[in-house]
Length: 192
Image (cartoon, rainbow, N blue to C red; front, side):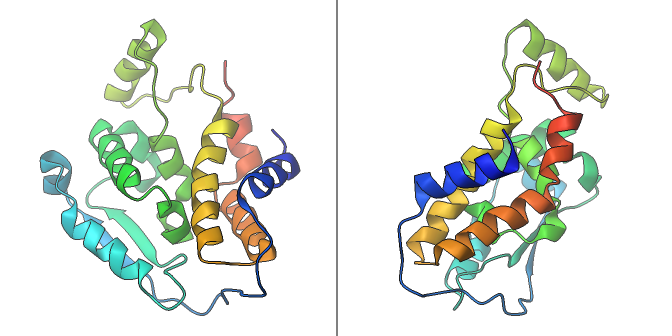
């Protein structure tokens, strides 16, 4: 799916004409959520949910105000760690609009890749084995454009609930696509 089609599709699905409210992108000092190995092992994330809820209560509703940091892990390859994938999936189940709150410094591309649901069939087993060995792999059978759209749509719906203007929502979509290097991502990880 081309960028313009994706933006248009998400806006048509989520955006209603709103007042002239706009969230000015003021200089935000992001809050860092430091996720330790103990957090990953125990699966506890209530303290992190509390931080996210504080960000949601900020005057501009926390847009881009959270940095997720995984202690001791290579942030470029988070999707290769099953514990990180489980943790992020659980966090996004509780806060589906989390993409709206995340700062670009989080490496949004890798976070979205960690959220990919992997088929447990024969190819899924192959992927899991590759994941365990930390080898590079392709996302077999996954349409990344649809996957990305699903998470961006949740962020835009949250933005819509904050009565942000359609222009601000379009800027949100465009900036997320820029941060994840959308076109390059689809080229690097084609669905087979």
